[in-house]
Length: 397
Image (spheres, helix red, strand yellow):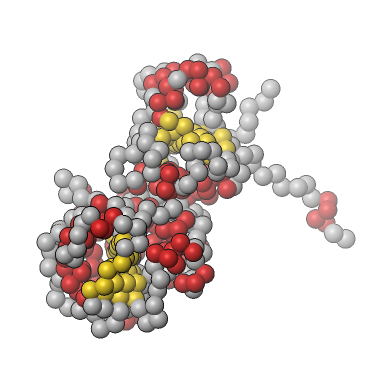
């Protein structure tokens, strides 16, 4: 007898309406994280409104997003969140996401606090924080923060910290295939911008201008095998061009390729987020900046070095060390991170090895870390779990 037929069907949680708030401070990282979250939620059947104060990065990051061509995601200017006429036409959201501590417009709070339905059941209000492996992040993850003042007085926010361990908020996941993919299987545009040759190493560079780029170029030129340096668009391109003795203006030309002996430098245009993710899986080394790029590089399964954003009070140093401790970084990896974060004029350290030269001290650990992270629930899954727990069952009639 088939007992499964007598069991009640498992009811999946109903799709939710999300309001994600993003203020773009600099370097596009805020927009990148928020867009990845919105696209992932929409792919799981949820309805998402992204309120953003600078949508220009989405034109290349997610082509068609601002025109409404991504099912499930609606992009709205930040200022419209304070427009009563717009708010009156927006069904109230089930979840509010404050990305990186941005504060919601007072008019938004005032309007929603006046709605009887929300007074009975306020939205799950999440403060999405920065990725960190520091101990305070684990202690603070999921903690409530009661709202003591203003129109939303009496409601509660909850902290959500992305991280590398199961007790944290996890990492957002890419839609690109995991592990190394054959170069010819990727996006045709990537084959145009990065036509890999047999026997050639590929290094992806996505950096701030403060990276030691001159030392990097000199070291790459001294390699005994051909190396392709793929330079992602952004402020680092101009700095790399100057470090290599090239015309900085020419560096802005999409797909420009320059040969310096065995080193081939290719300047990439701004890539869609899905293209950038795919490119990560095709390179032998990632030199990345920003938290979203680091998260995706770790999950791509190739050796990665993180250029952390420097802070005036030096807080970034403890954050970097906590990250290295969390991944169990080898001495070779720590040496690379020390060099890569030492400033633009840092010389090449004596004895520093490339990951393909370091043997078991580096390269083999990258796919193992990727597999460990992919075996954990991703950030979206953990966020949904918290939201459903906070919302509880729907109130009765």
